[in-house]
Image 1 (cartoon, rainbow, N blue to C red):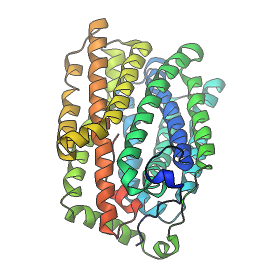
Image 2 (image 1 turned 180 degrees about the horizontal axis):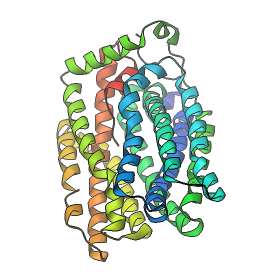
Image 3 (image 1 turned 120 degrees about the horizontal axis):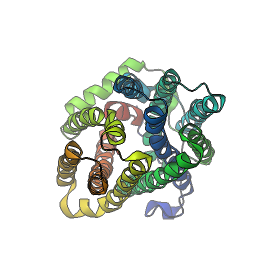
Length: 372
């Protein structure tokens, strides 16, 4: 299987990302969709819990349906995108996501919004998102030189952190002005902008015709064997799987707990999410410098250790501004650690896969779960 081929870029792009038009278009588009997704993150719990009066069981089902496509499609997605142009996948999935999300404000205006409708949107959007993320992560090595991957991943993490913060506060304001249901129009518009930006990306062609003749099951198995046999990648997968499982359990009732027990309200929820996004931005910006000083191994260990520790305050939190401040600070530190470890993990895993000279980016993405 051919290794990723870097796009033909100006000579300056080999030593710096400045002036790299394709990477800039990619980053702008993905950041735009992140702004909408952050607004979505504020509007969804407000809509389900405060407006539709969802029960804990309904919240659990909604969270399950959001995660189900990742569990079912993560491995096949890596093989699927290797059979298609990644730029085309980015455009198509953004357009599909815009259409799916638009169902919520449309039904809100018509007065037919319900929990079953949210279930359908969650399931469809989750499936589209799995394909989109596989393409979005796999296309980066085709946009920049291998020596710039750490810098590119740091810039991606920083842009996403800034977008999360901006989207959270913007979403909070939009929910307050137009209501939670109509606020999803912002998310839909962000996907359309992201699709347009994706059309501006230029990448070198990869030998897809050779890969298309191979069985998908063989590619998936190859990715699993690679992960199992590679000493550097195997512990990363185990760590990410463990933290991902714990994070999924916590996040299922995180917003429900804050809105019903801690009584933060939509504004308080937005404040906590906004500060957390700022922490993600800070962690991504600091990651290259921290890695150069302490090494990737220590950074990964520290990041994985800090992430669960910063969830402890949630166990004791109650109503009031003091706990709102504590939870906001803990959330910022938690996502700073996650962003720092995440950018390091992506660079380490990509460097290993490129050195192997036989795995495609899609297969590696399918076998290796990637967290922010």
